Image (cartoon, rainbow, N blue to C red; front, side, top):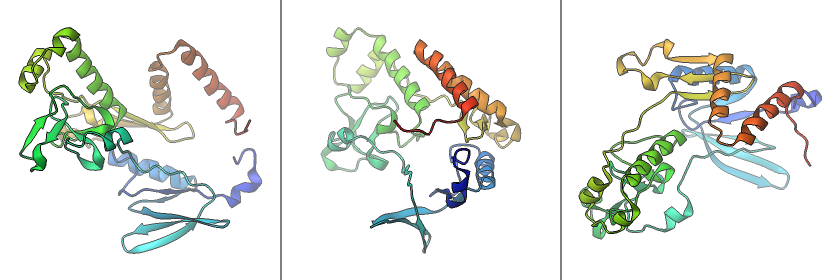
Length: 273
């Protein structure tokens, strides 16, 4: 914006509100601090441990109320971008009433990703059954209280591959005739308890800068080593290479580099059609 409308720059201010103690909570703490420092150098007002209490629109005056402990703050806004976390789709929330629900209304699953039921409304922690032993849940709508995983795409992808491998071991006509007994069902599918394989995490934060966190791959005794993460231009180029490589469409693999090149040479297109 400042490239096309430099005279408006003094009238614009960006606030970044984070309810948690730091940015990028799933990354190494030093990387979160690094990104926060970079944002502040760009003039972005970063507020951590601060929650958005409410949003108000009164005539032409729009503002949000922020809360940090017992203190509140009012900030006038022109544009509000809200990212308030994940929750299951309405289908999951309104259905499966007999199933156990975890944080955020997510379906509780066992080590084999089988949905668990709350029998007769009793204590769900001690009195559970699989739901027909044939209903599985993966991704953001599922949670295993014993093995909590972040609601990330890589988790859902590994869970999908895990179940697909099990289903492909047995013809569909045999699966339909299997007993509802969960042990027999899992044995027939040759499933072992699901185990998430942590990989490195990548993020970009503007100005051709990025970060790669390798700490999840390291033994616990050396996870705090600074050699386990990178940041800067190389990390940004690595992120873009990985993004391009994961495209399954040939047309996307051709068009995406063209869009990147156009943006690099001419800047971002902010026009509206």
